[in-house]
Length: 132
Image 1 (tube, rainbow, N blue to C red):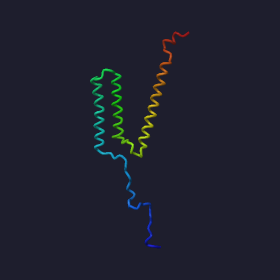
Image 2: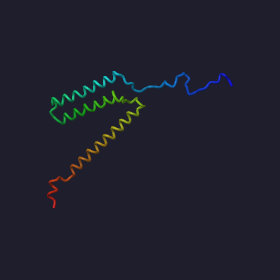
Image 3: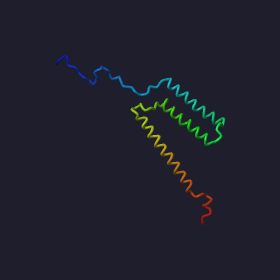
Image 4: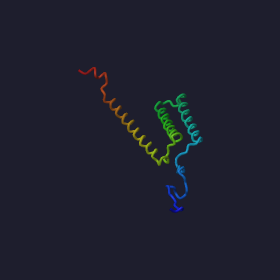
């Protein structure tokens, strides 16, 4: 046999070992966690202040404002703590998030629609007593 016999074990021509990987995903940093934590504190303190001082007199408007703060806080948690973006896992995590949101919206809207129609189509108790 020849002493110059070379074995190719799946290594590329650049001599990289098995531990070299192409990392394009999100790398968590202390700075990122601190930014997320501070934003979460602010997004919690502002609605708490609004409710405790009764700054907004209309309960419907207060509910909409609180819902807006809640949505922003959910996004902050997803970006800074769950590291969700369009680059992680080739975009599959973002696609699954969009699908989950669509399913939840459909389920909530359908449930509210069914409950509204059940409420409007049910016979009130006082009308049942007058029936023969």
